[in-house]
Amino acid sequence: MTKILRYDSMNILVTGGAGFIGSHTAVTLAEAGYNPILIDDFSNAEPSVLDGLKSILGRAVTCYHGDCADRNLLRQIVSDFKISGVIHFAAFKAVGESMSDPLNYYRNNLGTTLALIEVMLEAGVSPFLFSSSCTVYGIPEKMPVTEETPVLPAMSVYGNTKQIGEEILQDTVAAGKKLKVILLRYFNPIGAHPSALIGELPRGVPGNIVPYMTQAAAGLRPPLTVYGNDYNTPDGYGVRDYIHVMDLAEAHVAALKYLLDKPDEPQCEVFNAGTGRGVSVLELIQSFERVTGVKMPYQIGPRRSGDVPMVYADAGKAQRVLGWQANRSLDEALADVWRWQQHLLK
Ligand code: UD1
Image (cartoon, rainbow, N blue to C red; front, top):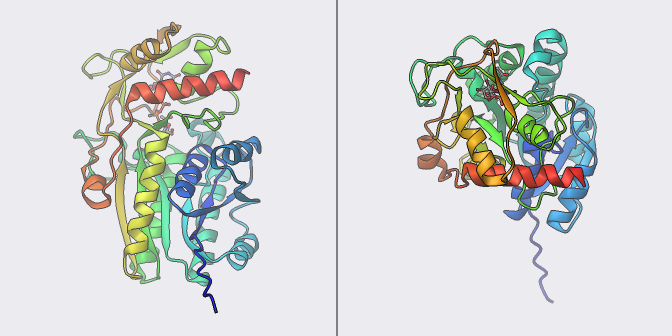
């Protein structure tokens, strides 16, 4: 009798899987041999993302349309699929909106995290990646920031939901619950898949600089207002660590592999996900113009309240422990995001 060997790829639950970072991570997971199972409520994502994923991967990706705080839906998913790990992206992320509607942000961002942890513990699923942010470092005293840089009181409700999310997971692990957690602190994700079939789809006026720049360069928005050029930084402009979303997606796959290989003991580790390079707003504009050949219309305005003058990562721990580092250049990220913007205009 012939023995039929079946290779079943591991199912990885990706909450917020139709969003910007979630959709790019779904591609990278699938290309690494995992089967991403998405859940998204499409409150800040378009169903067309699923068509983009299908075109890139050559097959449809499973996606549940629903609320990740819905425990019954999560139970349904873990009964439909044997889930081997979870990547939790689902969250509201607009800083300004979080200040005017705090309860909505606390309910959504904490409610989804609590429901997910509880259902994963019930189902015995232990690898858990949490989307955190460099916003937890506040205005750091020393640069670059390492994972040991102190976490400072949050400056926004959004930032507080990330800090509390980290604490919920840390406390759950400290209580001996069987979760293997990585808190990935993202710096500034930009770019798009090189195919231009998926990318960032901001609703309304983009709050983040790169999507605003591409829309302004395409003539869809008034000139960019640069929020201050009198900071105590090398050229006076704000400095950030812009990371290509495909590099960030690869960081998730590396972190997942690391957790899957670890013994099933309660544990929680923190990693910065950045490039280690600080880039000023002026350098960003100059790169954009060089790469696209398009003049970036901009004017200098006052500082934006709550902005940090400078923050960039020490990316050494992820390289040493996870074997991951960001490989794509700023120019590549800007070329990809511009190609995506042109695709949107078609
Ligand atoms: C912002 C959030 C941060 C969040 C991150 C998610 C604030 C204060 N911080 O980070 O909590 O985790 O987004 O992506 O909102 N800039 C301009 N003009 C613009 C927009 C931005 O000059 O129209 C400048 C900013 O002053 C800053 C840089 O561009 O120096 C990056 O800004 P942005 O893209 O909004 O990201 P962060 O402020 O770093």
